[in-house]
Length: 551
Image (cartoon, rainbow, N blue to C red):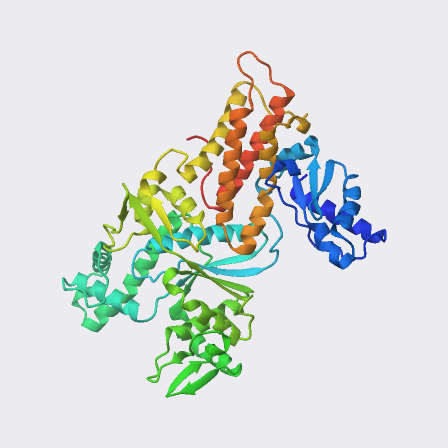
């Protein structure tokens, strides 16, 4: 019995009590079932009696007694105790608890998937670094977290579109083009321009691909470097993302908003909503009505549109393309964008607490031999995605960057993340999976396989019970990770699961030794090991990390 099935059973008990006239309450849509920290309190606990007591007009313990009587009659429930003011502590019989192993193995890749966000259309934008240089380490964090979040959301039933916003218009692109032109002509990079080996590499690629480009007039030459440099840089970013295992559904061009007239149309729509006004020759959006610290300029007095005008048009584009919720994942230096982006949604007539979400990711540091690494050979003054992958690999980077809340600054220790020790979290989890695969291989060599005559009641030790309880938590953890937009919950769950498996493995003999014959217990434990392997593989897949069979 899974926690979800037990939740439904408790809900059914409430419904039966209502139908029998024993309780005058509305049947809750969902009953919370939790795993007690103290196993002496049973396998699962629920506070439903406390929730129903007030509307029922009865003491919590009286409601709990009523529900306990009904729950004790459910097949698979061994015991129901009432604790404290009215908590229900439920103990399952070993056969019912052990049956979860079969449920997981038979469900395979589908185990853990749920319908918590079924039908919700989400536009998830992440990374979106300017196409003026390689992805730096902050963007690498968003690549790992954003792609993992997309997988988690889809596993919870959401309809997700992943999107990369290319800032291919404006001053920074002009500086990028001028930097390429200067490098190609052997001149110093202009003030505020871009430096690094990658600028030289791209400039050379352009001159090699466009013979005679340096013979063009300066303006035409600059335009060529702008157009071709942008193409090459975007191609480089796409290559890096692909090698990191991130595939965006949409690459959206900021320039297209200006070229298509979408920016002007957006301002007209916002003016119709009553939030656009003119002052001092400029056009403004009255964002202070919705929590922003100041109103924002859409069009300057000289007629030039601002980045904010494009931001407004971009949000409306997402909504027009069907996004019910637009999730923005921004770097730590973008705190000031939160209120202004939410204000755009409000000015457009949307619910800024529901239709738009802005996540801020904190900084990332890298250590080698105890000292911080700050420089990249290729980019000069930043650590790039290629540096991270070269130093620790895709799996270690994705797992480690996704395993912490984005609210926290994190440090990646190259020495730890390239070691095969339990201090390395990705190794710890992957090793658990490889260990299970090794058990399967050895079982095959012994001619032992899972028996169709599975006897789940044999999985009765404390280590087996703990492992089964943790396996049962996976759907709930996954649903919570999607609901709260926190994929790190999956990683932390996997580490706890791996720990419980290692303890089970160390204390429970799975395969026969020597000339011993396989027993029903052997077969039952093979079911349990395979169920654990399935859940770890499913969890690692959600994080975009491989589940190796050998290490």
